[in-house]
Image (cartoon, rainbow over all chains, first blue to last red; front, side):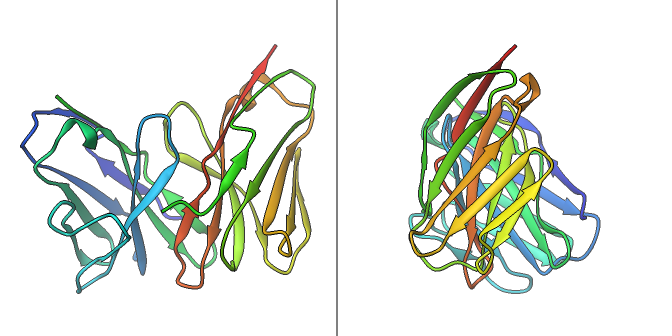
Length: 113
Length: 110
């Protein structure tokens, strides 16, 4: 199955700033997703990162707040913009492969102060 | 948005006992999967059951699926302290998107 490198693994950021999270996959994958996991909660799908086109966002998530890039089939970034303490969460990227199912990155633990 | 509910929210058992958790979902699915997460780390895929399957086994894990009731259960037999984790069900819709349930936090004490 694919190996995902996600970074940074954690960060502490000031409110009002932005953080870009990177997700690098060791093989080409068609579908890549970004999730948020708020403290003590389950995972919520933010968006599907589409290669060569705009990401598809789930209800409650907007591009201005969570811009996503997907320049090729092995890489994607998620930016958390104009952060507030409510954005403190774990952010995870995920890919799906036909023969291996879904694989998750190790996550980025974000704390906004 | 999350797909469904899981119960119980938390489960505390002794080593050697069985742990059962349930998951309900709302929409039509292609398959349902169970994942484990240790202490807020990355997720580990445990088992997948397709919509045309009713039961599946993998080692100490047994999963059932009832599409008429839109529900699934995960049974961990002969639990071990290392099974302490959060367990999530997740459904895959026709678009290939994985949506997670609320999760069950399992604590296995020696």
